[in-house]
Length: 307
Image (cartoon, rainbow, N blue to C red; front, side, top):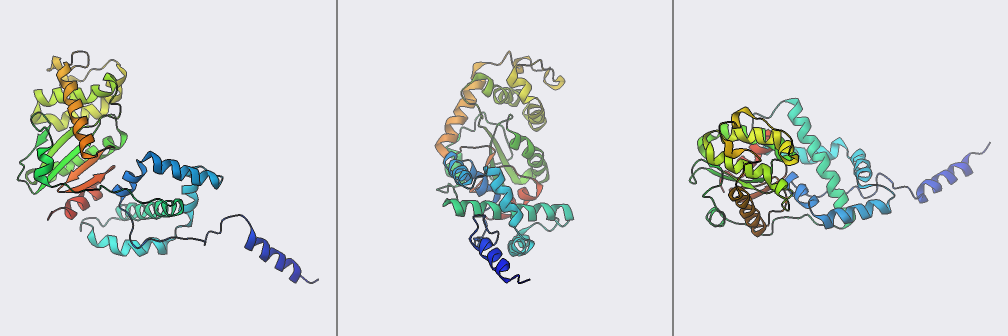
């Protein structure tokens, strides 16, 4: 039996089939965007709308499209970037789990690079730089939670909300960094509520301002309690935190309007600076957007040491 006609038909069917060939358009940029740039770009509603539109044309959801592209990324492609990125990592990052997480970060950034490339989108970056003197002059620091001296090696300004999941994930690592580099960091916490239109949305942050006023020495401890109880505070559920019992003014039902006003002032400052998502950080002139873990915090500090 002559199989040649059948083989020819199979070849042409595969050649002209509508399914996407995994080897087609395996886009690899010269350099990958950072995690912060990816998160900032995905915070744009217009970018997400375009990505979903392209995914829909392909007959997929954005999540399905992303997972499909993820399956095509090879170890060889990851190694192309890993050989460069590993050179700037802190020496202590050498355990297998940390390396696996960092290589997975490269895989995800390759995927988003391909999705943005196929959608004709450009990465969203902060359009301007702002120096230390300029940014500190634009902020009301009188009543903001802060630690350290403005002459420290690093100035770290954080915009966050106790209701934000990414902020909650980042906080333990931020707390450890503040402890590790205690005298070398000037840290400022600024409020940026996810729900800035309601009193309930402002409530956890307003409560935080009260606790800072009453007990600044233990504020990082109180921040931990605020992250743990923020949803209860927001929903108006019964709440008892023994450490807050000494401050009757700092109870959700007793909060004065002045604390809400301080949160609103921070919101206006953030808008003027172009902050539009949380957590956002300004570290020695560099904008960092999105959740940070121990490894990425160390990398940010290293990259900004001489700024």
